[in-house]
Figure: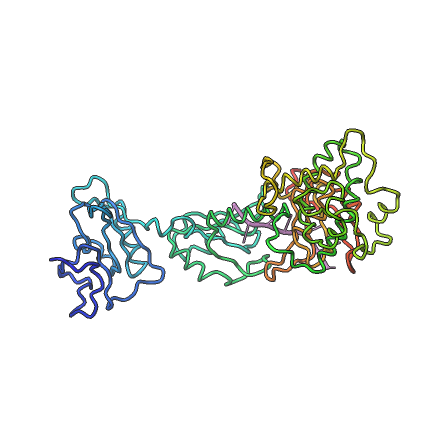
Length: 481
DNA sequence: TGCAATT
């Protein structure tokens, strides 16, 4: 008997011919589907893949075998799209997730159907767990909680395939973990049951349970991180009214400080080489922030102004934005001690700002979306891009307090770039409110840069606040003696 | 105002 195409939705027919009665109704061609009378499957139902099925068996033949474990919601033998030939496998969904689990444990690899030489396969379909759909990110754990604790927490929701607490190299928990369940349904159940449900001891807010990022999201995140570190991609003009002024003021100071920063320690050439990239990065950001400052500098008039690029901020434009720095360590000292913004260069060493503009070209070339008009003839410098590194060696990491509320990572990095190679710059953000906590961390790749930054920026006045810049407290835990 | 990081 030929079934209607689709086999499933015979509306309002006499009798629910698709109910799974044992009567052989001949509904075979396209799979069994629930009719209107059949209850929906559970929310956490699991779609099973069934493999090693003899080609001679269709849905009707298979049904009795599986019905033993519960009511079937859907059973479909896979057929070749073109030839319609039985592919020897099927998808099976029970109404209840429990039925699926039972079927899986009773049948998977447990039994071989006639004519097959390998045992039947019954397991969650790839679509159930492909990618990260059954992998959870768990945040806001207590730092003391280990894998066992996490397992205990999640175990009621299903079979845990994998459980990893994220740790720093030193073994300290980062307060988060990944938990992989046997199925998507289990993972969802855990989210429902646990997310926000409690606050673990030592955590600052309630438990976070969500799907782990997909690979794509992860890649995206990385991109954003890099972009943030470069400070080169502000999708729109920064929404930071007052902050722009702060930044401006700071940058103007630092344009001058730059010269001082590359004094002793590094050889002049190395210093310039190391710093030109940084200056380039901050200039790219700073220029769009500063239409006024840029306008002070007629096109082509500034040192090294390049066609096709926004005029870099210069040492000019000190007018209304000059911060009150009376008596501030670092800033005024540097301005009052006769240090010229353009100190004499050793013979053969180009003006650092000139070099910076050259570096700027490289950045512009590497990120044409930011500065489209610039020729892309310059090679990219992937090796110059910031790595995932988070912290420098001891003595290189600064703790900065009294940041303006508006300060973000980008502003922080800009502020400290002139003192050396910034390995990372992070403003600490309250997870709950997404607001800056007004402190942050900056890591350099060498202690000299860190010291220079402290000298120059500690006590620097911004509005009513003064920056506090000091070495980050070293974590004395796990000192190897 | 007070010392971090979500693969």
